[in-house]
Image: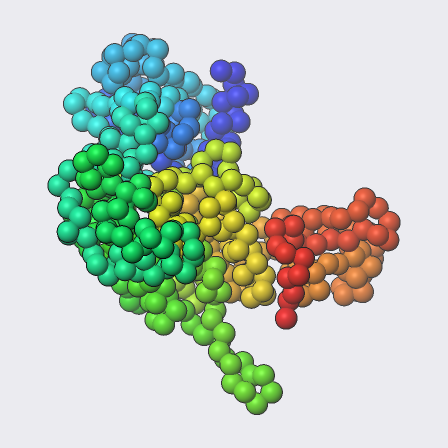
Length: 482
C-alpha cells in the first residue's frame, strides 16, 4: 500500500465523528503491551466480519480528539516485522494475516495496523478468548456474536436459529393476540391461519421448525414475555436529558416481547417524552407534537427490525428539548450508506425472520419505503429529514429547530432562509433568492450552490432553473405543506 493510500485512509478515519467498531485510535505515548494489541486484533477482526467490511484499523499516534500527536511506541528491538509475525501466529497461525504500516507526519510518527476481517465461519480468538467491541469499549465477544460469525459460512440467518429450551406454551398470549389483531387489519396473513393454532401460525411465519416444531430465536424475541432470558439486551432504553448527556432528568426501560415493546415505547414517547407545542386556529386551541409521531414510529420499527441483537446492547432513545435521537447497534447492508439511505433502495433486513413477521402484521413495509415515509412526515411537520450517522450503530437525529440542524453543515444564516422558503413553497429560483435576501444575482447563485446538502437543481440554466428539496422525488406529488 502506498503512502498516498495510507494518508487517505488516515484522513478518512480522522474525519469520523467518533470511533466505531472497526477503527480504534490509541495515543500510545509509550509501549503498549503485546497482550492488549492482540486483544484489539481479535476484536476488530471479528467486528469487521460482522459489519461486512474487508478490514479494520488500529491506529497509534492519534488521541481521543482525533488529533495526530505521534507515538513513541516501539515493539522491541526486532521491529514491526517481528511483531507482525508473532501476532499472526498467536491470533490466527497465519503469518500473512496482519499488515503494519508506519507513517511520518509533521505532528509525529503514526503506526497503522491493518486487520482483515475474520474469515466467514471462523471467529478470531487471542490467547483462548474471543473479543469484540461495544460502544467503543473492548469486551468479550458474546456467544450470540460468535454464533453469527460461524453461521455466515452458510449465510444463515442468526434470528432463524432454533432455541431448544424455548416452549410455545411460554409465549405471551398478549403478544400473540396483538399480532393476530394487527395482521387481520393488514390483510397480509390468511384468515384461516390467524384463526388456527399458535403452532401453525408460527410455522406459517417461518418462526418454528417445520419438523420438530421448536421455536426459532426470532419467535422468542417477538413473542416471549422475557426475551432477555435468551438474548441479552433485548429491550429499549429511553431517557430525557435537560441539556448535555450528563443531565439525565428521567428514564424508562421497556421490556417484554418485541410485539409489546413497540406499543409501550410509542405510548411513552407520545405521552411522557414528547413535548407538545400549543398553537391556535382561530379561537381553537391545538397541540402539535414536537416530533412527528409517524416518523418516530418508523424510526423505532427500523431499529427493532434491523438491530444487531447479537450485540447484547439495547436500543437507545435519547430525548432532548430540541431533538430526539434513535440509536441501535445495527449496520447498514451494502450498498446502502448514510449518504444514500433516503434514496429508493431495496429492503435488506438484518433479521429476515423478524422483519417478515413485522411486515405480515403491518408494522413495517417490505420494500425499503420506511425512510420515504419519514421524509413525508417531517416535511409535513415543517422540519428537515433526520441526520443519519454510523456511530457504533445507526443513529437518527430529529431536530425541532431547523437552524440548529443546519448549523452542523453551514454557518450562513441566509441559507436557512432559503431552505425554509423551499419547505413552505416547494421550490425557489435565483430571482426569488435575490428578492428575499435583497442581494445580487452572483451572491444568490453562490448561496444556492452552498445549499446543496438540502436542495437540488432542476433545469440546467436560465429562467426555467428552480431549486427543490433534495428529497422531493421521494414523496408523492400530491404532498402539500399546509
